[in-house]
Length: 281
Image 1 (cartoon, rainbow, N blue to C red):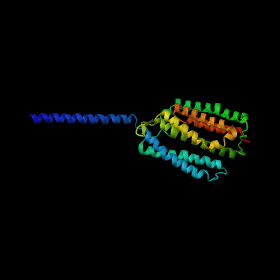
Image 2: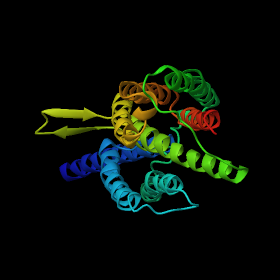
Image 3: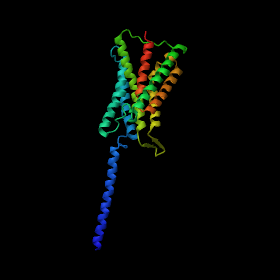
Image 4: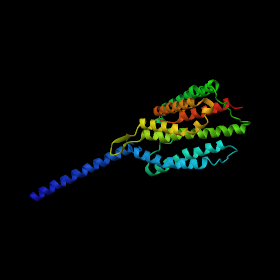
């Protein structure tokens, strides 16, 4: 009898344990299909992606940028195409491979999942256009007119073919800035989960919108380093620093709020188009 009772108790225990395992597995399956944390990038993964893509893009860019290759009789055209390849094609290729391997990162090309809602897309476009047309464009015009000792800005575009290629490559160059700093950096780190513990947990870095905003601003300032070699000639040194600083902050805030890059990208393209049209001789 005692052996029989023990057997019954053991059987009940095994059934209880099996039920517990089933419940855990069931919860995991439900969480997976609900999308709860299943497609989120971790902070470690976001960091690794930048440690891989960043050096590759920079090495490729600097290795070719200063060779003065000529495409369509213009070094600027080659520069714009090169930046597009290095800072859009290379990051997108990495994210695509990463997505195929892990099932993650599908929203980090231009927007988060929330940033694809009509309300946020509309808000992004409105903010981006108002910012660039209402603030940045007048800022350049007034700087050209009233800043002392600056050179006159102009673009020499003799025919429609030149107009087309100029505006096409301007768009490529602008898209590079917005995609790399705002999508690959800001949106990716904004959505990253978890934390990184450095120096024996003395420094803990957590993913989230604040981290994404700070990192995009640093990349934005560093990415405009070449602009500091020529922009001060046309709007002044202090004004150039302030212009790039403010634009990095305000565009970052727009992406912070709307979680997509549609508005800042379109606004930035139109800003450069308007400036080209204004100062074409």
